[in-house]
Amino acid sequence: MDLNLAVLIDGDNIPSTYIKEMMEEIAKYGNPTIKRIYGDWTKPDLSKWKKILLENAITPIQQYGYTKGKNATDSAMIIDAMDILYSDKVNGFCLVSSDSDFTRLATRLREAGMKVFGIGEKKTPNPFIVACDKFIYLEILKYESEDNEVESIDNAPTIKTNVDKITTKDIKLISNTISDLADDDGWAFLGDVGSLLQKKQPNFDSRNYGFQKLTPLIKSIKSFEIEQREASKGKSKLIYARNKKQSKTSSK
Image 1 (cartoon, rainbow, N blue to C red):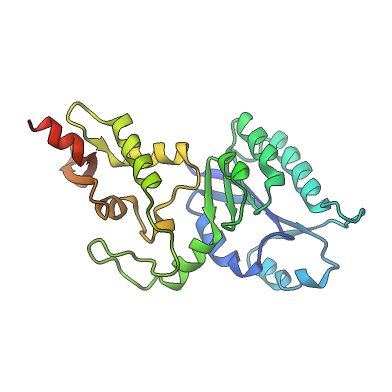
Image 2: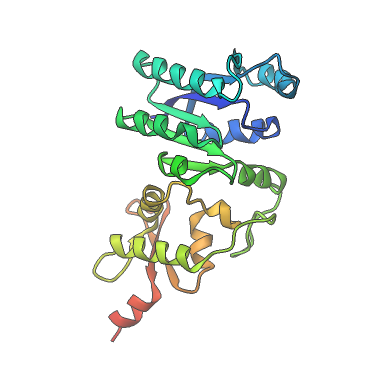
């Protein structure tokens, strides 16, 4: 069942150029039944948002900056989030900001049983990222949109623009996760691996490394091997992964 999502956007903190890709991404996780953006709309720097809001049915919430140096937008967004929480109209939130001020809000919403998705730029502080169930980088959505006509060939990345390189730390995270879920022969169902990776590191996303899906990402790393198995009904294949070191040990 799709989640009913409240999408709350920090207009002072997010560039308007990302809106199309952002709304398409949000639709993957649920139905955005509430869509609001917060900011002081008397300021000229928010003028680029106005046409986009009509096209995407996003409600602008006016928030004046009453005190210099204080972020009134954050306060308005937090108060609205709590009102929505207690209205019982949604079962998930999407907080769109690169501001760590929403860390406590994300934590509180999850404590109340809400699914929380965070969306922001790569400059987003880690405390806000780990407070969410899943965190998506806006830059990756933009790159993905620009390169969406490129089809994946074997293990070739489908996103070719300025992506992160796989580090030893990333490989260790994947390896440990496979080990956590492995059966006696070392194999772990890749769907479960992806879910556990998300829980361990909310901003883990194969697209960050230039791959549309987890399977080609795993295939590109020599430390792992992939096996396809027939599903019980024979209509689709199930994909499993294991650490190569473990497979060598088990073959002795």
